[in-house]
Length: 75
Image (cartoon, rainbow, N blue to C red):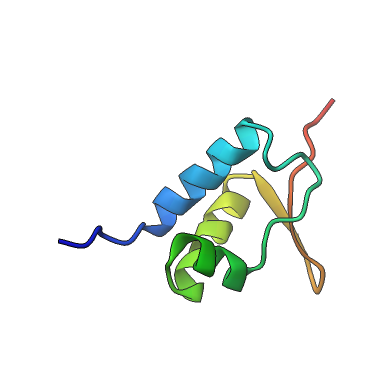
């Protein structure tokens, strides 16, 4: 039986874990929606929902036309 695809919440949790592990540093640009979709074997819309969840939680910030970045930690 094939594994179930990850939900957008699972993907957001994995990205958060990667941030905490130092794989994505504060100020680093996240991969594009299509790159995340390929990485997690999900649709682009699922990847976009995961990033939207990170933005809603304040983990990431969007820069229109430039991408989504890991939020810099407050001093």
